[in-house]
Image (cartoon, rainbow, N blue to C red; front, side, top):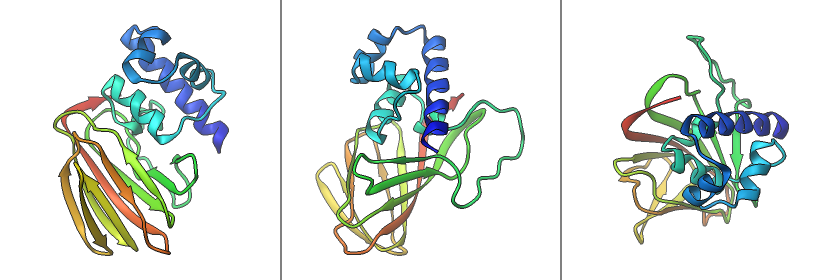
Length: 190
């Protein structure tokens, strides 16, 4: 699975970088990711963490899902439970899985988030106009936005402007599962 994800991210990174006419050095400065790391990712030798991939996506002003789906002209895409591309935090406590592929022009992404007990996942600020709507399906999740923490139980939802840093946290002794819809003010095309 890692080889497949690595190859896909490598392919998409090359494509975005070529379209934007960016050198690895320039992309490194824009994304805040070392040139060496970008090179390893582009060569398919490294699978980036969620944080690193988020920084790279922000530099191109595209959603993270743009790196997880190859170009496709097909009309129907099925992602079976247990399949699809997952991004994991370095410690493995946070898993994000896109619930539908991105192809063409869209303004929203849908993710399944799994947070193991003790998980703390910080997210950098997204582009201005980006919003998130989070629905907790199972367990207990604490969301901190701009320094304000909100505890959410199964069935609770929250909507917030995501142009500020925010953190997902699971302080409970059982795993938490949530669905996240990210919406963008401008359509992204990939």
